[in-house]
Length: 522
Image (tube, rainbow, N blue to C red):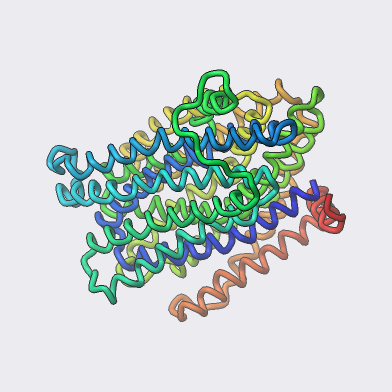
């Protein structure tokens, strides 16, 4: 567990830089284009390759590859190297023609043939097609990057894969900075230019993760073609099928949210949902995702034991740690939501009128952060023991339920985009609860999480009670004063209050973290 905590800390450090640069790019994007049909169209087009990345790259394929690659590394390193070559070759075989087909279709299909939203109309469809021709191609390098990043994690190299997303953010930021000097001032032209820069950034990301594997002798030339049945690579792709839904329910729900926002709600709704997801990803990547990525190889290793009691103890410790870090993050972001959104995004074309719907949409989504983290953790536990079907079945049902609930909340209430994110949070809660219950039959829990929830709940309540009194800057103060006085200072003091309450409660989770940091590395 010591090494896991150290790795999680390393991942969090690089991910923090990635999320900070990501927020800078999102601020620039919101203020440059605004919450309108152009911004909505760009973000919808950007969602599609990212869904492919989640489904085929860092989600399903990595979850299926890492256990197999880990086992082969122990018994036959040469076979593990061949497995990586077969899997990467299969990704190229599958995605290469698909990206080419999508690009050609996007360039040839008349925009008038497609259902156009009331906002933007046919011009919006023309922009969507042109963006899709470029951005969908990004799926190929980013999926390969995810595969090679999973291999690096198995080899104990976590820093570079966690730092790679920074490259894309830099390309995005530079693209927006160059628009003015290059004379690119029309919103649609800015969107197309940015898309081209993102594709270039994806290619560079791939090169960064391939280079250390090649230098270490772990990288072989990809073997094009689909892997034969019965091979190790074939087993990975067979296992990947049901894993697609089980690992990626949140991403599929996000795509549904943005699609419904694009066609059913007023202009700007997609932007509000997107920014809510970005605010969610910031604490999620630093807390729950860091724990899940770090613990997964250990779960895969311990799942091979005849007795899964050690694996379950590891899982329960990770679950308690997930609650410890996600609950205050979610509550704090909800309480400080108005200040956070104003500091991060308000300005230029993102006006004061866009702030309230963004705040409400974000609050409804961030409320599900602890359950998203627990659901992803439990899904990884199922994959570690070779059961890919259970998370897939649960997720497929919940995706349908989420879609139905979306319709009810969007068409039957005045919540707007907040109804979509509220539905996603409720689905995450149901997903975590269902997986936790079903996992008991595979690996009975070593201890319940009720006390962990109670302690973290008490500490979070104390933290939230202190936050409103910690704002130092007036509403009309400058950006820096508001960022430091109304966001950074309350967060810092709130974290101190949270930790102190846990100390007073003698929380074993906090004590375990402190002991592990003092212990020598395993």
